[in-house]
Length: 454
Image (cartoon, rainbow, N blue to C red; front, side, top):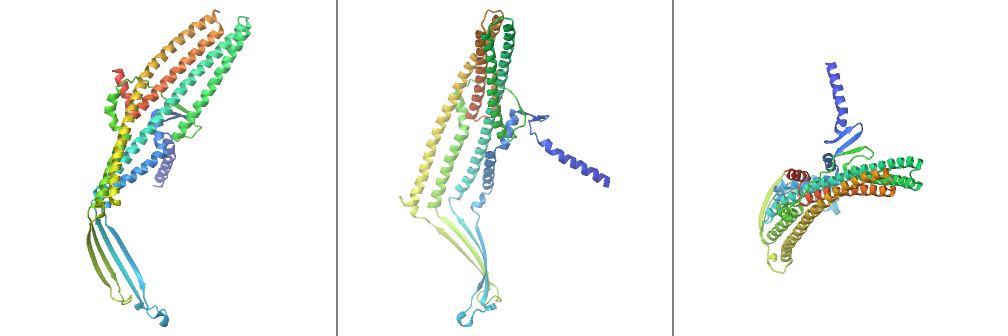
């Protein structure tokens, strides 16, 4: 038995030490020899887990949930209990302080007060509505974090592709410089051409170094938001998902506008103000019922050793307010002001709906124009690549000057850079449209992909 216990202890101990390493990489992350391979899904998951604002919102949500499930607290009676020890002596100036049993007494009491008001039902509705509003805020905050993380991720993907292009441009410049060195040594080209080729190499190195610094800074910002310590080597796993989106904005507005969080929140705000108005009117104008029961016990005036006596008292009263019914009084003005707040909230709802509709129209138009620009950028890259091939061949044959070759190579790098920027902007605008429609960015992309394939 002792051996079994010892072996079991060591097995449990080894499992306990291995658990932290198993939890080190959350779902979706892959660690390979200290290298963290980070996918978009894992980045979003880490961002949600690391957001302090989201954790604060979750606390507020739990508080609102707790209150909404205990509506009985609005009508729960007020319960109080007291106990005391009393001292009373006569002729103190003549006889002095005497601590006799007859001078002491004790008392206890227990009371219960129950108030009924016509505004209580609306107070309960306000608690339920507060939970719904807080839940909506939490879900909206989570979606905002997801979309912003996806934007940062795709921006880094674009930065990574840009680094690849700049490395290729540097490689081409270095290769050309080597060829020019050989040609200069053979007396085929002039020194000015060789120096210009060397300048091209240094310029390509500078562009690559600048882009690398920008990429590193953006990566550090992302890692900070994900709660990943800086210094850990990270490789992003993923690429652009460029899908053409050509939707009717009016149809999108009719389908998705009512479900936008800002519009739903404003409707809930109107509902809250209506409940507040009704609760205030009923509380101020409607009669209220108060029930009180109190039990008292003690030794009375016979001293602390006297027989215990107790009594019970109760009361019921109805309070009928009159002042709020009189126009112009403070109470009447408060009720009137509550009604005006409801009307202002309705106007604000109309303003939010108009702004949201304009935003959706803007994104759909931008995506339509961006797609045309993207197609032109792709054509430009294709032409630039072919032009560079022909120009390089002419340079080798001596029919093209190096400056012309350099100009064509710069045009190719510019065309590739422009295409990359167009793809990045299109991807981010797609996320913005998903955000404006209150759609899950994953479902949005999958749905559009299926439509394009169909």
